Length: 49
Image (cartoon, rainbow, N blue to C red):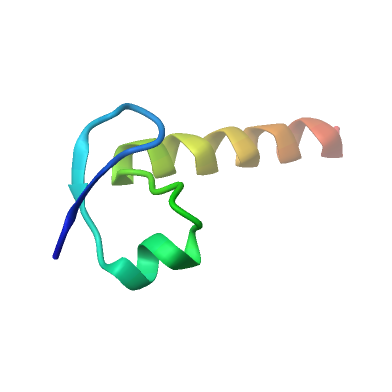
């Protein structure tokens, strides 16, 4: 599997070419992906109030 640069923190991550093309080159490491999901969840919770 090739190494790519995380779009969030610039860490080198190993992903498949299929994932690269599916995400249009904007790959995230698991930590940045968790942060993004957490901020989306938090903003959704704020909208419900």
